[in-house]
Image (cartoon, rainbow, N blue to C red; front, side):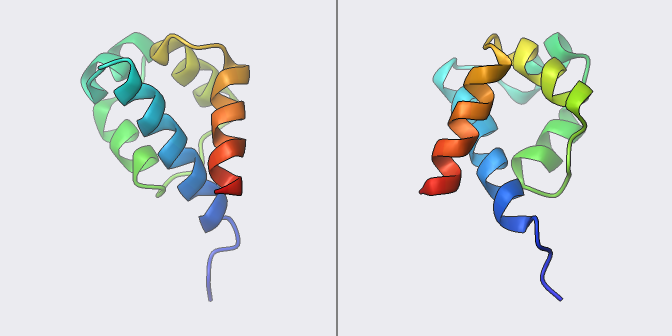
Length: 80
């Protein structure tokens, strides 16, 4: 059985990685700034986790972007 959210998780994974790379940040840097571990970021960027709202808010802060930009980038990648 295919996970019905796999496409959405992949789009979020691409969006997070893209925003991080645009800012020349390492996973460790984002994780530290967000209060999330590097391992968590790795699973997120690989599309293997479904983050909570709190994790998304922390992640956007760690990336240095508003949550709306993270969501907008996710929606763009979902359409790709």
